[in-house]
Structure formats: structure tokens, C-alpha cells
Length: 147
Image (tube, rainbow, N blue to C red):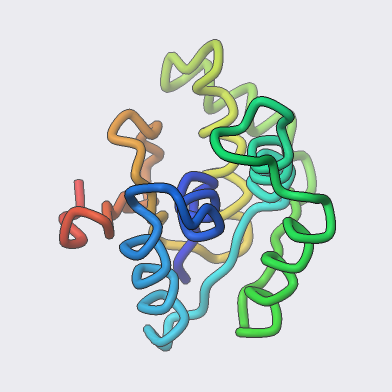
């Protein structure tokens, strides 16, 4: 399964973003991959916060626009993933093992939720995305070069 990171969602939603078309193509490739695809619930919350933020570049999206974008992805086959049992204990343990702290804990939350739901890879535009054993990082806006 393919997990989509928040930044791809934001870029695909934001027409003015330089990465807009590339992010839309990446999401379409994930949809057509036959591997299954989805997003961590926490990514959707982060997406909503970013695109509706009052100081967003251009104009902020309305709640209805942000919701409509996500609903279109779900209609196209995306799954929305939630954390599984004992998530917090596993997140704290993995954070300690990997030396993850500060804002990168949010990446870990996304990665662990994706793994819990069967993802074997995460597609992102974040070159600093936290590396989690068993989860391959793919940069689809750069020709899909995996890390």
C-alpha cells in the first residue's frame, strides 16, 4: 500500500503551488498503482489546518473546499487510516529508538499509522521525512527516486 504524506495533498489541492500538477500526477499514479493507497487521519487534520489557515498564500480554502478535496480522493479509492491498538506506547518507544523528537514526531505519527494499516511506502516531498524501518520513502515529485 502507498501512503500519501500531507505535503502532496496540500500541493495537489493548491492550484497556485508550483508543485500542483506534479502532485496531482503523483496521486493519480498512486491511485492507478494497484497497490492500494491512503492517508493517515493525522495527515488529513494537518492538511485541513494548512489549507484553511487565514494566512495561507493566496486565499485560504474554505472548510467545504478542503472537505470536498478529501472526499474526492476517498471516492477515487483512497482509504483513511486511524492509529491501531497501543499506538501511543509504540510511537513513544519507536521515537526513543530512532531518536525522534520535536516536530518530526508528527512524521513518525503519520508513518506509524500508515504502517499499522498496511502501507509499505510513503510518498512525500519532504526530504527530511523520518525514516522508519519497513517503510520505504518515495519522492514522486522527483521522478519517484526512493531513499
